[in-house]
Image (cartoon, rainbow, N blue to C red):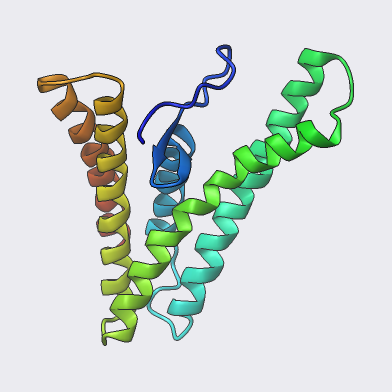
Length: 177
């Protein structure tokens, strides 16, 4: 079943159901773009530490996003409710912000498939970037479809993800040369 989450109407954290997982579209897009942008400007790709560097940089960036957003969301909740959060509220915040770690799954799988099949670190990074960008575009188009958007607006939603990805690839190429 595919549908938007029926969460709090005042919340802007919409999710789409993919198989048995509710994916927060905003966090997935933001997380993917952030991780790919950091990977694009990382300077250690030409060293022997390329594969380890990929893991450290991608996991480190994702953890920083998670922690920063968790802290910001908890602070916001505290000020809105004027009280400390209970354990259930903390659990909800942690679960919501942990969605950033979903970004790592396709990027890491792609990176290691390319490496195991003999690809260089640069080729693996480029493949992971292309997969990440493609998934952002597909997720945006999917969410737009679920929201009832059709025609040229649906195409524009997916193309928007590709444009953001092209900017990231442009940064990667500019830094690499």
